[in-house]
Image 1 (cartoon, rainbow, N blue to C red):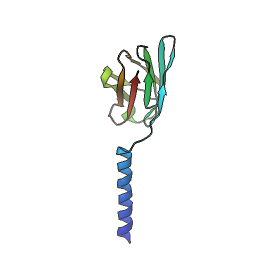
Image 2: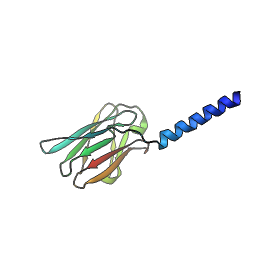
Image 3: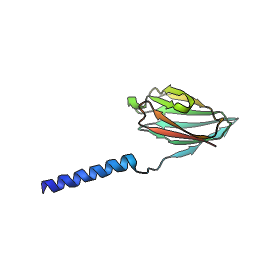
Image 4: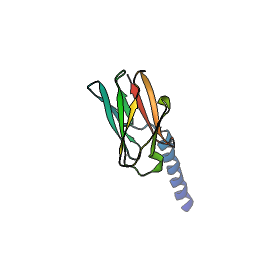
Length: 123
């Protein structure tokens, strides 16, 4: 009986891990507000990024305002490899990150350990 219970629990855990890493998950997306020839959006850093996907208008200067609430050292930096940005995110402070919107496309960002990700869509 014990072997059966252990086997069932083990299979359930394997299934959960596969779902967690390879399953499709809903991501929060938000379009930046454009005002006075500038666009900005607030991104909360708390166990990940919210919103995870940011939509920006091409050719309009953009600012992403990151506010880190999570004490984890993994989320203490945000890295935009396509833009050459590696910005420190002090806890409970808002940091502005300027984004070049001259080229349309999809660009990813990640935490310093590349465990949490987000995406910018410029169109």
